[in-house]
Image (cartoon, rainbow over all chains, first blue to last red):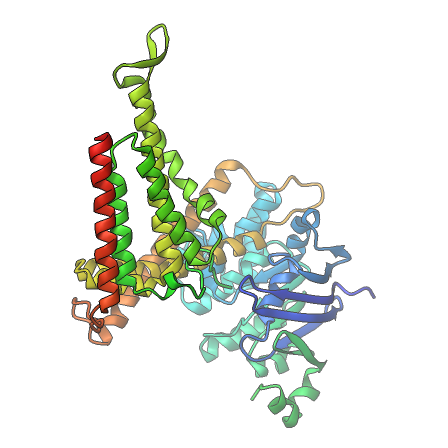
Length: 235
Length: 262
């Protein structure tokens, strides 16, 4: 099967010269659930920002569903890859929950009834029916995280790229979010420090350190290897 | 992901960079006041003023092009002086019916444009060679109201946070700006305008909230409304001498200009 995400020799440095990614190669198969782990500053978020072309590849290439990430493919790619940012306040920029969840579908040019049904479907998927009229900044962090997920689900993406989905959640909200993510069929690439979440949810783990991928394999095997966890700074 | 482009300071090792911030601030202020007081049409003195700026630019270790290009931002403001060309009195250079081009008016327009160009160069010199905290310290030592300096400092600190935040919002929006085959993407213009309005609104609400949190953090560490800081060491003899010499030079130039063209 052709990989849905294909990254080859991707390198990226921030404008101040700080290298963030170096020669990253990664294939993700359709339906695969991948954890992206590693210490702070390892390049996880930077890698996610490359998946829909928010950051352009400086060297190497990124392909999503066979499309190279060039200017003319970006709108199509952004419909395919739902990127959820770590801080839900960044994700939610509209006055009401409805406006935020409807943003992607409206931008895609869908007719009004379709937009309304997409919003309902997405809010139902994250268990937040009845929140459509609420103002985003009055929600709790757990609620915001769910709504942030709904804002990309309404675009019916094939790939979900999630940055620290469980950060800042209380235990119950975290458990609820894990159950929610487990119910979603999309291909997933999840940057996280939450190794228990990775074990519950994501069958493959990719370890990053200092901008490079240093290990990749089944999550169980990696997390059961105390030597590896120590070596990669995961404990 | 952070913005750096807003900070005009350039790290170099030059005599200007190592000069005391207070001296640079005073020299710049003196230069600005003197340039503003120059009489119109004193072209040789304008040239000397330009020479002073160019010498300082050469000393700073950055290219002339850097300063000259950036200081062009002053030119649009000089447009405000364009009416002078038509309203100032005789002698006239050209007359077309009711419209006449006044020679003294033209002279004043060019003088104003030159003055603003020189002034912006001086300000650029100050900010490219002085780190912002040093500039704040210099302002404090010159007895600018402490509260004002504290507000400028906080504004500088949080400008970057605000721009970062705006950048994150717009990335989140870009991420969800997708297209489907067979559907014209983008939505209607009023809808896009409303989405942008929502972003600006949430940025403002968040800035207000952040302001509250920052104040709480300051209060938690004992802030009582009075901005305090450690005193700076007194100016060295060389610095005071330089200030006196520069002040005398600027005064002399002004005097020459006033006698010759005033």
